[in-house]
Amino acid sequence: MSAILVDPQKSRAHCARLCYAGNTLMLKPATRIEELCEFAWQMIQEAFFPLHPEQAQSEMPVTKFFRNHFAAEARFTHSPEASDS
Image 1 (cartoon, rainbow, N blue to C red):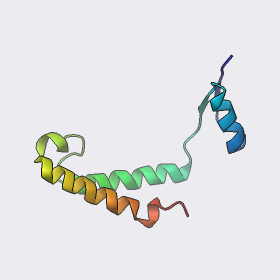
Image 2: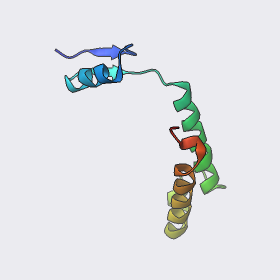
Image 3: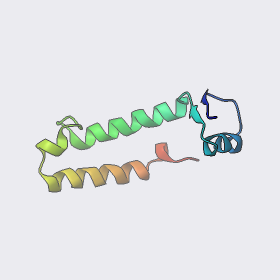
Image 4: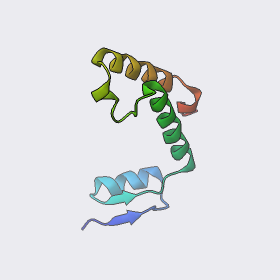
């Protein structure tokens, strides 16, 4: 029988076994993840300014949309904020 476990205080390996056994784990967001999400959202907003990012694909020429998208993706991927070190 599977269970829903909220923020279990277990090791990564134990949590992986719980998931593979069919359980659902609900984890509280860590501060670092929240900061990373905010950083990513800021970069996305900058990439498509002055348009709202959720409407940019409909309001921007396709080539410009993808140029902005890939430039933002590269900046994010290579930024120190996105590094896991």
